[in-house]
Length: 448
Image (cartoon, rainbow, N blue to C red; front, side, top):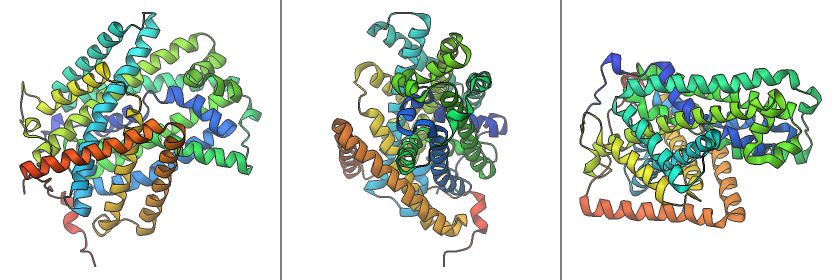
């Protein structure tokens, strides 16, 4: 079995750079639209809903951190599934859908970035202008990824720091305008039900910490820093989400937040610091979507290259150098841009959300089978699986009754991916091969 080749020490990502990659996706553009939707669902209990969704995400992070400390592979969760259940049609389908999710996310973030930039500069949102901005931002971060892991990590550290500075400034500026009585929680059955439903919805906003495992081969001391980066990214995201929710609900009537929906955070910023809040939110949104594109492109290219090397994606991804960069980077970027330019992405976001949750379930199930290696807590892992399965059920139920087209898009995507995987395997005979475990597993006890 081939050993993974670590990058030279100076080229590896530091703990903060790895954390920034995850934060870049977790705190993406969603924070700017979630506030209004959340206010409609949870009312004044919005901060409580964000805290509850963070706890659910922490349950998943536990399995990622435990497995990531023992298994070092840029294939990330797919490697975990292979270790837990072995190669199969289902594993191959998940591998393809994970990579496709990164490609689709690039398209979604590029569209969002274009919308915010054109609105901020007052330019017409014509198809040509949108296409030019989308192509420009994807090309810029592709060139940045071309320079390697360290360049990506440094850029992500700067962009994430700027994004956090904007959001924390908003929090600090809004604290004096908070009405404490507006934050008093409502704990009756109806409001608690709203909190649980909102928490299930917000759970998707924490997806992104798993990207750390897709860069584990490029991180300094991965056995220690992969778990640290996962937990740190969740901690930072939780502090930001809850703090922003407190300021939004405490300074702006819940009814107004619910009415404004997509620009609720801008409305909250206006209530806290005046008209300048709109400009601040626009700048923050640009930093957020930029960091998300950078991190997603890096993660998607790593997934493509790692899986091709291990025998899954077509051989075109497997060439190690093309102008000194993984060929998977260019293909991932071009496909993401093509989706943004030429396809209607309605329903794609639902497919991405469902894929993340399905992969979470697969990783947790794999962790349960590998708990003798990770020394994981069996009852806690089982409880994590139950919580995430319930969230998936809520998501699919919501999609089926509110947006049937998205629901059937999810089903069609998985059926299509399974068919492609079946045909590809039948014609080529290729299989996904496991990689060696990290050094830390050498002292693990054998399974009883």
